[in-house]
Length: 317
Image (cartoon, rainbow, N blue to C red):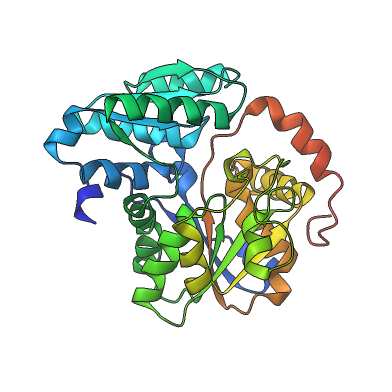
């Protein structure tokens, strides 16, 4: 989309001889951890904000987030010269708050959880009539995220399978629509953490699609239920969804850090973890893996190393 050309980075597509040999596939990593703000979220936020009318833009935008979406909205709004207000949980790490502020957004710290911050944001939106930028359940946001797939296929046309992390489903929805438009035969495989798998449950009809609690080190995909708009797209366009454990995710993080000097956050490592765990079931010779972000909370590294030491993945043990 031409609206994003001067806003987002065209991130590199990386391959590794060692990983290719280890998996028996040609593997291409889309390095959205090298994107502006450190994650793919800037794409959807930028496209959504680019579509606002001048009247809407003058009223500003509002969002709720404890991480990557906050930074994406803040930078996208600043780029267009409009005011952004981001509601974040009171216990959001200072580094994330500072990063979001640095992009020019006004921050409101409130509530003990994302849900409480979200409810406060929606209350203000109803009073000010500013535009709420949803982290995933919005068609413009979905369209912006789809540019990841467009770039990947432009960079390597042989890709026959894309492995994509799923939180609320905005990324995989956009990727699936865009990729299938270019190549209807391409396979789309979604990945959720075992401790936060409502979309997996609903897709496979094997458990609750709305969870009371989620538990995973991959906080970027720790979502309690799929989106109203995203799930029908997932159901129509996604070929399969798998889950990975926190041990699997931690092992993928440590492997890439030690072997490829690349930092993935938990959500960003989920797709690679799925390739390692389920690779023998994924029919692909040229496999694209989306590294959705790299904004790791470094205070969690000791926990991640301890989990990685428990790995059951034979090629990493």
